[in-house]
Image 1 (cartoon, rainbow, N blue to C red):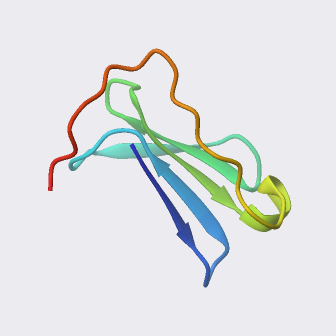
Image 2: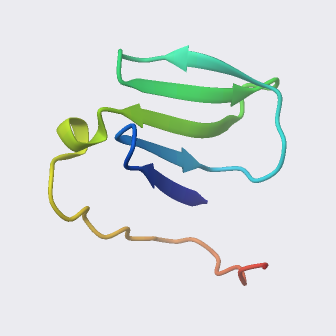
Length: 74
């Protein structure tokens, strides 16, 4: 999983699956969209107007629970 913030457009993208995927976009609200692969697997989540949606200041820490540890490739 990768979380990226684009300061120029104030957007956060949470990528759940790596690699190339043919996706369709499902808008939940004007600011939040889901990217779904052909088999409806969730590939990513886009949040526009992120400072307003998530709050300004430091983002909260990410807590991983009950996930197997996988060595980072790179």
